[in-house]
Every structure is written in C-alpha cells, then in structure tokens.
Length: 222
Image (cartoon, rainbow, N blue to C red; front, side):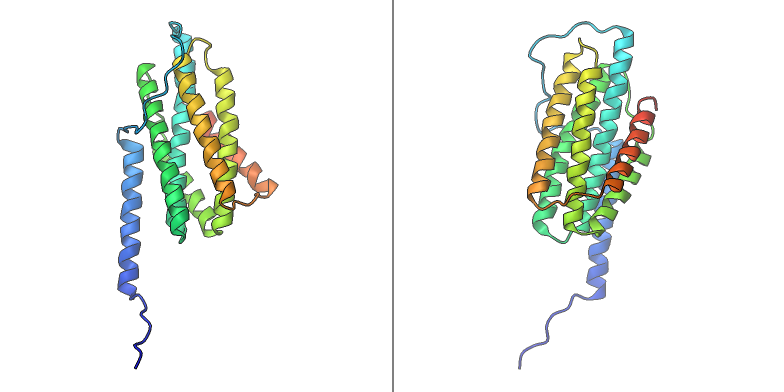
C-alpha cells in the first residue's frame, strides 16, 4: 500500500520561519552597524584629483552619505524580497545583487572616512522602512517584485547620474565610485527585467520617487 504524501509539520514550518527571521535580523544588524568589506577593489580614478576645499569636502561627504543610505536600503530591499519569494532561482538572483550592493556599502563607507565624515544617523530607520516596502512588493508576486527592482534601480541610476554632475569637479575619487555603482545598478535593473519584471503603475512610481526624495533630502544632513 502506498504511503500517504508527506506534509511538513507545523513545527517544521515554524522552525523554518524562525530561521529566516533570525537571519533577517542578523543581516539588518550587520548592514546598519558593522564595518563592511568589499569583494572587489574600490574603483580608482584614471587621474589624480585636486586637493578639495573644506566646502567641497562637505558637499562630497553629504552626497556620498546619501549614496551610502541608498545602499543600506538596497540591502533591506533585496533581503526582504529574497525572503518573500518561493522561487529558488529568483532568491539566488536577489542574493547575488545584495552581495554587489555590499561592495557599494564598503566603498561609500571608505570614501566617507577619507572625507572626514560619517554615515547617516538614521540608518536603522532607513533599513526598517525599505525592508517593509520590499516585503510588500514580494507578497504581490514575483513579477511585481521584479518590476519593483527595475523601477528602483532606474531611479537610482538617475539619482547617481545627478550626483556625477553635483560632485566637486576635483573629487575624482568619489566620481569613480559613483560611476561603478551606477553601472552595477543598471545591470541589476536589466537582470530583473529579463527575469520577468512588470511595469509598475504610474502612481506607484510617483510614490517611490516621493519616498526617495524624503530619504535623500534628510540623509544629506543627518
């Protein structure tokens, strides 16, 4: 006689959920509070830059702090979306993108130290908000979740292009980092689109731009 089909016990499901919760908490704590190491060398400019004035250093630091906050949010988004999908291939794609974003975290942290500045004091808040948004996108389905990645990365690309124009002309070190970050974000958006990301409704895109504006304006100073 055939045995009855196996159904996971409630205790096994609970154990798996607790494991994922603990891993998410660990990722959050490491993203917000730990020092980060890059797997790739920090991008270097083709030529030596100028000695920056104090005003130029303050501007460059403010912009790089905003970029660092963007990477904190990216870690939260990819972590929550990897948690929210049941597709192992998609989960692996989100995890791989998060590893590249960790390089960005390390590079922007390093540059902030070189400029004599600090990361945002509100990073725990930024992480929590982005994680919640990413989880909501994941619960809407894989195609919507991927579409959210596409739109997020397209907006980040536009934002980084604006920083290339706003950074002091002599700050070639920061510009080299931002240029590589932009290229990586474009690749993430293209990968998500190829994987089946759908175009999000215009009101959703508008809300995303508004949330990003609040974050970038605040992180510029705090």
